[in-house]
Length: 254
Image 1 (cartoon, one colour):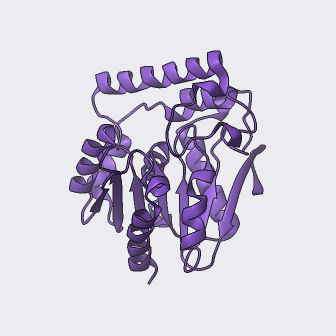
Image 2 (cartoon, rainbow, N blue to C red):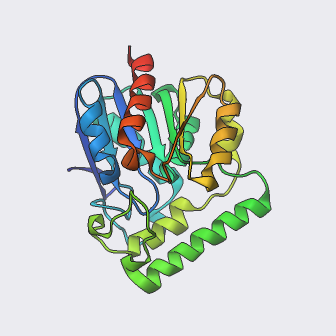
């Protein structure tokens, strides 16, 4: 992977292929490795950029908790696009990466030519729901602190081997990037005007409702439910996922 210094934090990323740019952001406690096979297939017609969030994979895991936030993650995404000279890109992500893709769209709409939202949700409006989500994030952080990488859950996209800096960065990312503080992202949905693909696995029950909600609120969004897939359909059902992704990319990139 290549390394980009963003304010003293070394961000690991990889760009493969040529053509319109697709920036893919992984979910919490995964890494860019979850998109490796998809990138290899889609690189025949597109430039696919993957990267590791702070505390994940090969990216730095700073000791300072203040080095982790959704806003800083969005800034890292922007820095990567600037570095590779991409004025616009389809912004896509899985789970937390999908939420960050929506946050990026809110912050930098002029840089977004399309959105790809994979087994993710738009956040919450009610204070009780936000508090419940943040309590879950704190439980994850505490679990990583107590049990190290053994705390990784079981899912197709997760692997302990990819996290060069151990579990401490994942704990800090849970507290700083995974937590949510307002309804900006969910309030944004009706204002999105770029082509949008919402993908969800038919077995990923916690995210089906949110995916259907996003598809109903984003004008013209297309919802693809991949039968038999769980939380990471791009990994477990790559042919179906790649076909859906290629359809969106071709409509955006010409």
